[in-house]
Image (cartoon, rainbow, N blue to C red; front, side):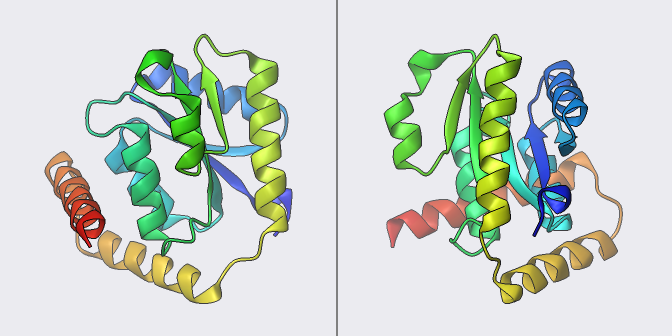
Length: 176
């Protein structure tokens, strides 16, 4: 996988923040897409196997960034298959140590420093382009995305159901 084929997903409930991050990264040649809620982010992640880096806000109404990290890993069979960067305006709610222990590659504080953002994302992209993918995981992820798309129109109720199901799987998994 080359850096050209590695896409970054930006997930933030603040549409302006997500769009600005995408514009910043696109200006330095990094392919991006945005999602304005965690549920939409999971759908896009499942639908596009070239997403190898996720930049997520920590505090969102439907799910926090660490929950989203767990869902992304669950969707790609525990191995992750994606680097994760958290963005927060509330550093007291999340310690960098906690985030790093859970596999986050970087924590960026708002207001964001554009140079630091580009540097963190570029490191994550470099890490991902050097990593190998398991073909089986890619095929399974693509099939899940096709089935979901073929099931019919995606609406907010369906996205809420998907998010609730993923949260339940995570809770059940932590118990075992």
